[in-house]
Image 1 (tube, helix red, strand yellow):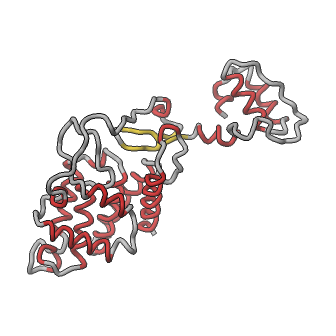
Image 2: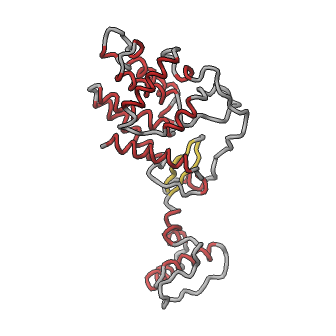
Image 3: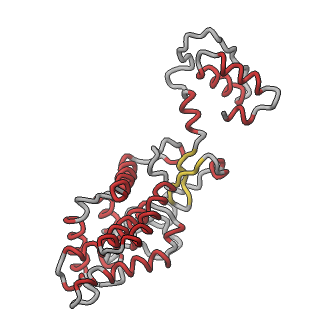
Length: 292
């Protein structure tokens, strides 16, 4: 299809004839690739038995075609799925090494650095434990190990020289988790109004909503934002506000597609570790669970 679109008018009929009369599309693909590389074209044998003579390690016609459909790219520090209809797919990767700039050291008080609602580390850890005990086990939408790895480093300081980010933990995500954790405890810090049980988690949820606007989270798709929005959606639905819940879940699912979580990262511009691949899969299936 790519060749048909790009070939000159006089060359297209011959290409169509080869496609219609060949026994192996792989041979046609090889001929097209050879032509694009400026080499002598191999003769197409229309009496081929249909076996792939390109070689075991050569790309097949299907893989070459699928590579034209889109790929994962780095965009502002976050991997996004760039579709074939976007000219962005022809731009180079903007990925930068995490080793650039100064190293990010652990903060002195990492636990309390993620929220402005409370400065009590015991309260924060208690609410997180409530979330992981009662909610995470049913709606798993993030990698617990990666989350705590970044969480215990603390929120990165607001310094332009710091390039290394805590990708799997953000203030938005932490406050969303704390808001949910408040619904499973009678702890004094779990309610905005200690005398009103209906206000459980409201203070942390307000902080999460504030961060959505202040940090322009809508404009910066990443895994943690997808996870936070999904948690905010189920929290609102659980409080009887399903319409608001659908708004948050809708943004979450759309952002998940924007990040290409429903695709495998086969692109050379988005080489991921097995740990990162697993985190993406967990988030995608978490979104699937929330939707159902």
